[in-house]
Structure formats: structure tokens, C-alpha cells
Length: 220
Image 1 (cartoon, rainbow, N blue to C red):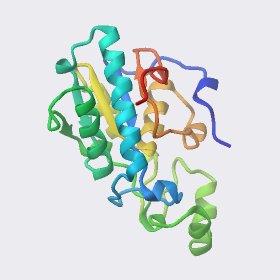
Image 2 (image 1 turned 180 degrees about the vertical axis):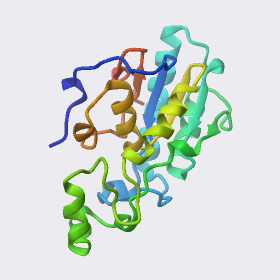
Image 3 (image 1 turned 30 degrees about the horizontal axis):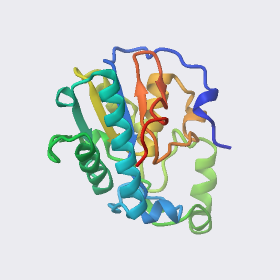
């Protein structure tokens, strides 16, 4: 069962992190729609995903205008995968910024799902039954065959977050966001792996908790 972010008791991160930070997942891809493991596979946005990216850009732009935040002072950081890069460029356009006004950071690249990539969950279970059953015991620490575990990416993301020095907009992936919720919201690993990270909506780290705070702004 997936956990609702609203049902988690939030505790302040145990390492210094600047605020605010805005977190956005990339828009939908065809593999998302088909519920396939995606990971490092570089699958582009589909039409729905581009619309979601524009909606999130509008939400962010409206929030920044209402809060009196100068968009030119924000630092945009994207995963290197094309679905995140295109999402970033669409969001920048919505914020009336140059489409190249961002940097790439490989730390934000999605976890590799190894041999599971391109397969649905039932297909992975059928093809790699033993490995799939083993991983079910501890999805946080046990990696898919030839892939990465959530646990293996914690230190890199902690360092990335602690080095942010200005207001930032981070565009990444569901696996990365689950680790970030573990680090900042102190979500236990067993719960973090099942968090539902939507392609729609902008989350805000305010120095105390990550919350989905920008859902009521303009969507079109």
C-alpha cells in the first residue's frame, strides 16, 4: 500500500539544508503509463508529460509571483535524463526564464533498476522470480539485478542537499524523491520506498518539512 505524504509525522532534517527548495518530478513518459521500470533508460516525455510540466511551471510561477520571489535568483538543477531536462526547460519557459538557465547534476539521475528496466512488475517477477522475491524482503537495501539500491544513493544525495546555498528548484525522479523524503522528512526506509510521488504538483521544503504546497495554483 502506498503511503500518503499527509499521514507522516515530519521531523526536521539532521543536517543543514537551505530553504526554500522546490522539488518537481518529471512529466509522464510512455513507460510510466505502461507501469514499466524506467531507471537509467532515457525515455522521453509523452504529450501528457509535457502538459504536466507546463502545469507545474505555471504553479511555480504563480507561487513565486505571490511570494514576491525574483525568479532570476533561483537556481534550477536537473537530472541528466531527457525526461527531466525537457521538464526543466518547459518549467523555465513558464517562469519566463531562458530555457538554458539550469545546470545538470548526475546525483539527481534516477536509480538504475538494472535488468528490471523495460519490464512491468509482473514481467520482472516472472523473469527474475528469485531476485524479485529476495528484494521484497528489503527494497531499500537490496538492489535489482545489475541495478542500484535506494540505500546506495543516500550519501550522495545528503551531500548534494547540504551544498545547496541559494533558493533552488530541483527536477528529478520518483526514486530520488523517495530518498529525499527519507533524508529531510525522516520517513523510515520501509515507508519511503512506497511513497507515491506524482508527476503533477510542486513540493516545497521550508526548512522543517517537505509538503505538497503548490497544488491550488493555476494549472493551465
